[in-house]
Image (cartoon, rainbow, N blue to C red; front, side):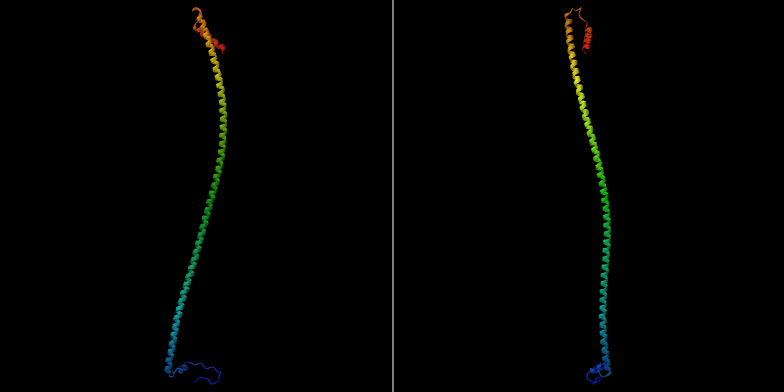
Length: 208
């Protein structure tokens, strides 16, 4: 073969396009040109295929990056939204807690104030009850004294009536005796009625 070395152990020289063309039976320049054009076209087709594959891979990679960026952006937006909601809820909770504490403090102050008022009212009521109790006891004592006085007056009045009745009875007896004496006398010796009454009055005064 042409272009091959004669010594043992030496590397064979790399064949060029012309030697390959000669190896497949292309001896004329036209055949070599056609063969080179075919190789060039095949290489161009391979290159175009690789370019298409590379473009598709790049497009897929770009879509994947866009999806990743979209997911990252959505995640960041969701995180920010969660943070904003948490911050708003925390602020609202703090505001509600402060308002509730203020209401509790107001209610506690009102309760303490009402308890003080109730204590004052109870003390005043106790004082009023004690005062009324003292008044009732005084009225009872006064009533007892009035009753004792009335009993004493009634007793004295009864005694006075009994004394008057006794005097009246005595005077009636005296008058009866006088009438009996007058009846026993003559008409000329009888005492006039006016004189009898005067005498009866003098007797009554002497008995009293």
